[in-house]
Structures are given as C-alpha cells and as structure tokens.
Image (cartoon, rainbow, N blue to C red):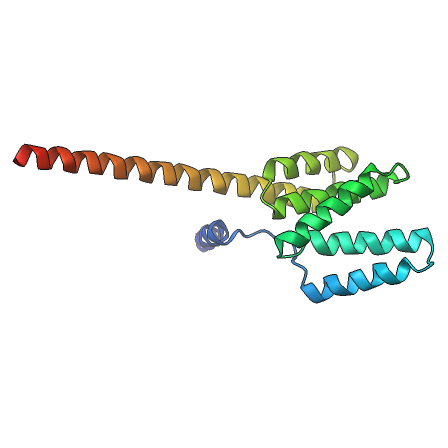
Length: 170
C-alpha cells in the first residue's frame, strides 16, 4: 500500500515538473565542444572532425537554451543529408534529432524520429526511454489542455448564470 501511495505522489510530482530523465548540458560544455570543432577543423582527420561535430550536436540538443537546441537540430539535419553516414551514425543522428525536437516542444516530430530509431534498433533503451517521455508529455499536455478548456467553459457558464440572475433581480 505504501509503495502505491509513493508511486502516486511521484507520478503527481512528475506530472507537474515534467519528470523526464533526459540530461541537460551546461553552456561551458557547449563552448568546449565548439573549441574542439574549431581545433579539429585545422587539419585533423575527417573522423575526428565528425566525432567533434557529433559531440557538439549532442551538447546543443541537450541545452536549456532554445537557440542552442535549434542549432543542434540544424547541424543534425545537415549531417543526415550527407550520404556517407553509417547505419550507426544515422541511428545516433535520428535519436539526437528526436531529443532536439522534444526539447523544442515538437513532440509529434520527435515521436516520428524515435520510431525510426526503434525500427533500426528495437531494443535501444535510450530510444525507448525517450519514446516514453514523449508519450507522457503528450498525455500531460492533453490533460492540461482539457483542464484549460473545462475551466473556460466553467467560467463562461458562471458568467452567463450571473448575468441571468442579475437580469431576473431587476
């Protein structure tokens, strides 16, 4: 019984806080990744450049700043457009794009991308976790939307009832 009560309060807390387990990235990490990309551009191997760009993309889509997330999305989409990506790189890029769209609030696009990841690797725990976070966020947003709509209807009905009551008193 106590376990059920604890789980209930945890789920209520997650409902109001957003409770996903996706990590955030601090601006100093992003700055470090940007320096690595700049250094790698000065004559390093293509593999090292690609690795540095992937790290920067990861950092950007995990940022709390919307501009960083959008930059990360743009970098990843450009990388996917390249034809030399291995299946593993494609899977990683799709996942990071899904994280980016999740962070930017485009849950339907994020869900599409994570589904593509799961087609490639059905048991990938990170993708499964992200899919659950997306579905939870969609449910939460739907419940909030229903609550707002119900409140608006209630306020409107209350206003009409008050106006009718005031008209009857006159």
